[in-house]
Length: 118
Image 1 (cartoon, rainbow, N blue to C red):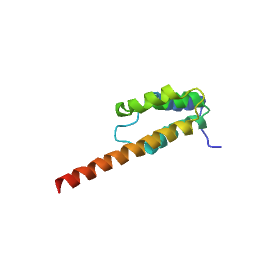
Image 2: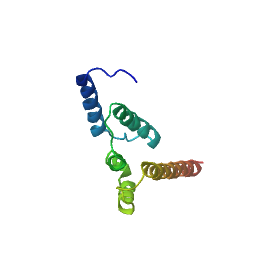
Image 3: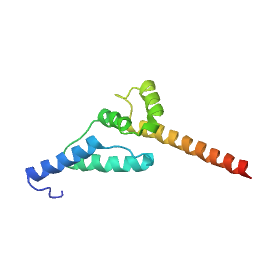
Image 4: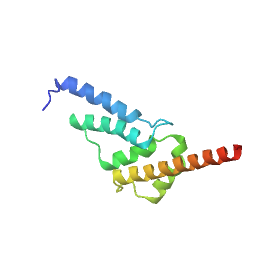
């Protein structure tokens, strides 16, 4: 067990991390894996200090932190799935699948433009 300091130090760390959690957003050019790694760092640090969020809280947070460009996909997920029971892994899988499709579409569009320029 790592020494965490006095209760005051622990509370200060928790407050800082909760603040980071509450203000957490995915950057427009960030991929889902990077976003989740950063998000998971915050969650794990909080868990280590005794502050644990439920799966429902985490699943509800991810769509709220997504950039505007993800809004159609987020809305579709929220309408199609029950976020109160959806496992976090399933949500991330849906978002990663969508990200791959968007990447493929962008690549295909670039290839079409290159062919058109020839």
